[in-house]
Length: 386
Image 1 (cartoon, rainbow, N blue to C red):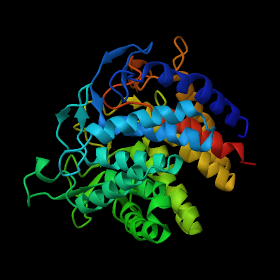
Image 2 (image 1 turned 180 degrees about the vertical axis):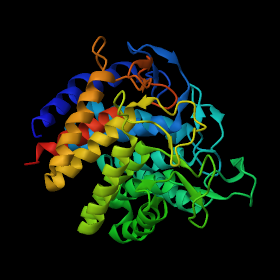
Image 3 (image 1 turned 90 degrees about the vertical axis):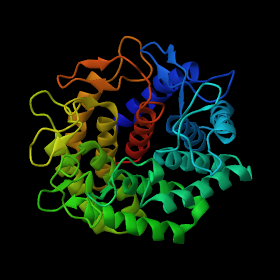
């Protein structure tokens, strides 16, 4: 397994990162272009806050963990300066999107803009002592916690009181975000927040009878027999499990790590497409048709986050099952998502058969994050494995 470390390192540093360095930087207005075609040409100049923030985090992380490159630091700061100036409404909530110049386009309905802004400014504050960065990260984090019971607030379309649901995504992200911000929050605050979200993820959204993780449950934690209540997103659940593994290791809670490993394998085995290979995007826990028309597509982040989870599992206990699955998912992912013709960043969307469905390298939902983060995580995780 250790030989994969060099493969992932080379792809990250010599292929993927140069793509974003060469094509994503808006030298005129600041921030980043994320809507890039197969060759890196910009096809839309709108700027989506969560993708801007993810790129700030990524280049700050590279500076901190790989090499203290002033180029990487400057790229991170250019995005941060753009967001600091343009990204928030008068109440401190982060917009969903801006135009190229930084004028708001879409209201701050999506709390994930806030989550990744906090993550970005938190990481940047670790490599740049400017107090403003730390303040933005901490203030945004506290706003997220205040909004977590009603994340969309006045922008919610749901009629109140009829079918109140809680969604898996925010507790999942808080598992990682809170740990990311530990240098700013302190260990006591991290433990306080993560203990509650671990319980939600592992005991409320996890359905022990089926071994699967639900995307939505009622506000009391009960199963809701509806499109939303039956929904499974194997990639989300698998990604959450490597967050939980990190928290379990931090807490020295070996039972938690082992439970996360078990749940991760259950999602992977259930979500794997035995006919064409790859992991389904959405599924229904009862096997009914999903409302998502893209349910059987194969998405980049699902497979890359799975590789991270498998690498971490193997590094933790050298489980041969993790090694076998890693090789299987690696072969599928590298043979289908990687662009062998143009190089650089990978494709994101395949049809069920594994053919490229959209030739974009970045867009409204895909930016400089899952591919480079996964390459970095797998590299660093396996580099020191036995």
